[in-house]
Image 1 (cartoon, rainbow, N blue to C red):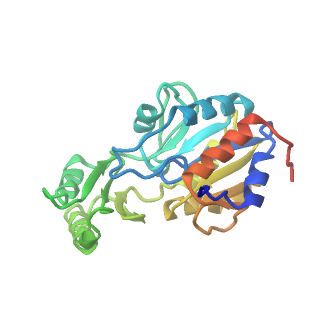
Image 2: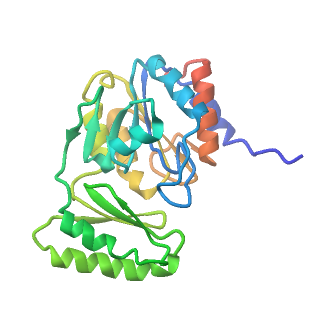
Amino acid sequence: MVTQPIANDAAMDLFARLDTGSIALLLDVDGTLIDFGPTPHEVHVSDDLKETLTRLSPLTGGALALVSGRPIGDLDRMFAPLKLAAIGGHGAEMRLRGDEIINAAAPLPQDLRRHLAGAATPGSGVVVEDKVYSLALHYRQAPQHEDRLRAHIAAGRAAFPGEATELLTGKAILELKRPNVNKGDGVRELMRHPPFAGRIPVFIGDDVTDESAFAVLPELGGKGFSVRRQFTPLAGMFDSPMQVRTALRRLAAGGGAVRS
């Protein structure tokens, strides 16, 4: 029988022995907590993962947050009935508790988003994800369209010269968003507020869109773990979202504390 390989043993052991009483867990979603689906709308959050997060939240004193490019409303639908603290839209919005969402950026104009969405012509395989603060064009199923999509986005930016935007690239995705909004700044702001303040941030991410979050960890005294991608700094690397879920489950089950 072929067994599933275990993540880097040192990373798995270090993560499982983290002191939940002193850390804040900051978790990217797509490609980290959950596997990529055929489209952004076809992903699955298992009941087991929801149960693990439910157990970890009180263990960390409520200092557990999702850090995603998705809007917070989208995260709430995916993780329902959980309503976790979150950084959404790559830092464009933040929620500490309850229903109050703090906005750090203005939405992209609807006309600009409509123009960008026009790139997903019928049968092209291009998938549109309108996040309000940004719009993403996914071409995982149509890699041959990357150059066309880049040109289409460039034309859209030229047509709206008064709108400040920047292009964010990821795994088979091109996303136009507001500038000066990123996960790193979102993490820095989140860590200023209870119950996160005074804790050691532990961030897990997988893509270039997470680079800014890894970059702020040294100033916050944090630890970074990744999924199949090298970042600086990095405490350990997992092989897959499944192994991240296993590590979180082990952490929720308890273990020795590592306070270094």
